[in-house]
Image (cartoon, rainbow, N blue to C red; front, top):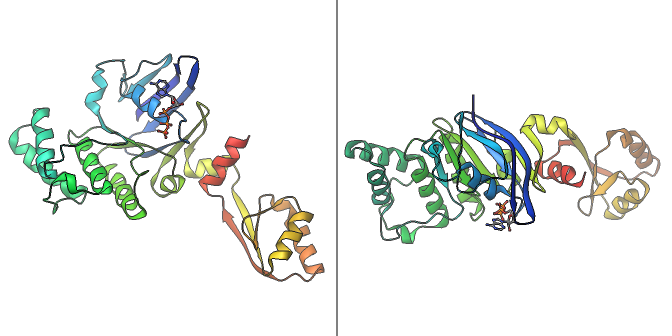
Length: 298
Ligand SMILES: Nc1ncnc2c1ncn2[C@@H]1O[C@H](COP(=O)(O)OP(=O)(O)OP(=O)(O)O)[C@@H](O)[C@H]1O
């Protein structure tokens, strides 16, 4: 079953059309990457899903129920982590989560157990200091715990890793993967390597439209499946051969990328004729970054 469906969503701010005919579905118990450059409209789409903005067309369903602008009933299924979560800095993480439980009306006994469970999930069970001393990564992890408190069916995270260092990013991504056991995760990002590491499905938003979507494998199949990297011993040879074969794109001083495999025999013959030393020829999968650039160019 799909936990979230966007169907032909449109949104304008004044004259500016931010989303045009955006449709995608997020299957249950998956991590779904919502990818787009800064300003692509990701936060706008998330606010529409949360009923915080009124759309200009289309429909959104969470757990099969339509979302309405304003106080939408569907938010009882949703946990939300904004891009910059705010906390009471004088509280400890356990106090903060207990407070979240109390205002949600959960029985005291359940609150204690849920706090312990979530602090373990996000690796903050030994952190007894006040939140004001927390790193950004620790705050994001606490934000995930807070968003998961009410056992939402859908967890929405707005750019949860963008301000984190590589270690903090990895910790947070691991938590999102663990979270899909009990929920469905939609997270927005412009960091394509994060998507490559943890997402089951992805949708690329560009210019207000979804330009590519599916599982990682599907996306790679739809677009270019692979490319060949050619590394030569001498940089002057790399420059020279790139000027003979426009299908070769320089990617470093000595390395070239070949996207059209049909040219490879001609290139190898040329290298052999001229006795140009080769260091490495490697066939490799295109990165998501390359796929995204390709889609955006077309
Ligand atoms: N309330 C608003 N009024 C007018 N324009 C807005 C409003 N909210 C967003 N926009 C514009 O809509 C566009 C999309 O913004 P949005 O924040 O949804 O993008 P984003 O993909 O989340 O970007 P980022 O990664 O930078 O957060 C931007 O050009 C932004 O300036």
